[in-house]
Structures are given as C-alpha cells and as structure tokens.
Length: 190
Image (cartoon, rainbow, N blue to C red; front, side, top):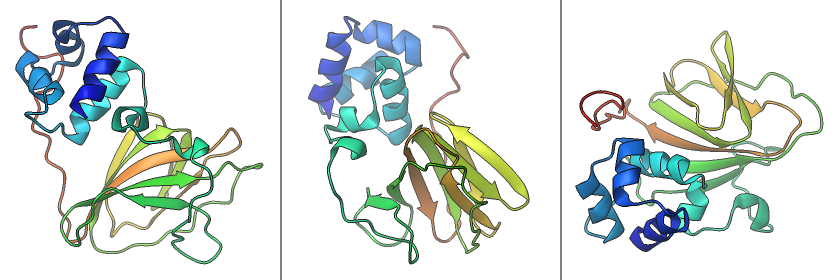
C-alpha cells in the first residue's frame, strides 16, 4: 500500500507536507504509511483517495469492478445480482464488505427492508445509493456515509439510471460501533 500511496502523491507533484495540510493527517503518519511502518485506517485511505482524486481500488491496486469481467455474485436472496466482496476474512466482531449493485434501466421499486441485531456503517464509493431506513428514504452519493442500528428496518437499491453503485459496509453483529480516533479537520493550528 505504501509504495502505491507514494506513487499517487508523486504523480500529482505534491509533497507530504502538502498532503498533510490538505487532509489534516500528520506528516509523520503519512511518512510511516508510505514507508510501510504503519498501516492506514479506512478513514485515512478515504481521505487520501479524495485528496489524490483516485478510487480506493486504485490505491489498493485492484481492478475496478466494472472492468474486472465476470465475477461470481454472492446473492443475499434469490434474484439478487449484487456482488459482495469480503474485505475481512474472519468471523465475528466488526467485518467489512464492498458491494456492487448493477446499473438499472428504470427507477427501482422501494428496497425490501430487513432488520437484525447489529450496527452498520456504509460509505458510497461510486454512483447513487437509495437507502430505505424505516420510514425514511435517503439517496447517498459518492463520499457520503450513513451509520445506523440494524434493528431499524433497512434496505438498499441503485437509485436509478446512470450506472452501477459501489459502496463499503462495515458491520458489527453485536452492535459494535466505529470509533473515530482522528481529530476533526479544521480545528487547531495548521
């Protein structure tokens, strides 16, 4: 990961100092990530991908889902052609998946909702995602996130014509929540 981050930064002609100022990530943290002495968190990777104007797939060195060719979908229910790519390999605790919903030709019906124990965080990487959360309907675009208790009925769908939707999900089966540890951007001296 470190060499790809360094290459992405250098291709844009920016210094570690420039990236630190733009993202609020400390210079020492950025240096340690690029040299492989520290592993970046998902939050840091999202900030760097945005700062460099590239996707998480490009940072990770994986082929974007649209160009990957046929993949074997892992359907949630019969007739569901969503592709689910596990990002964690263990069972229990927090785990993460990347979901890809195919393009649609017409506006979809309201997503079927389910509820279960747990807590979920999702981030849209590409496209527009329709999140039906209880009685509320939200359309999330690239870079937007939602966090909710999964005991609230919820469902997702591609929000309409315009291409596929890619999003990340982090899920805690016993209700674990994400706990950000970075300071809020825009506070303090720069």
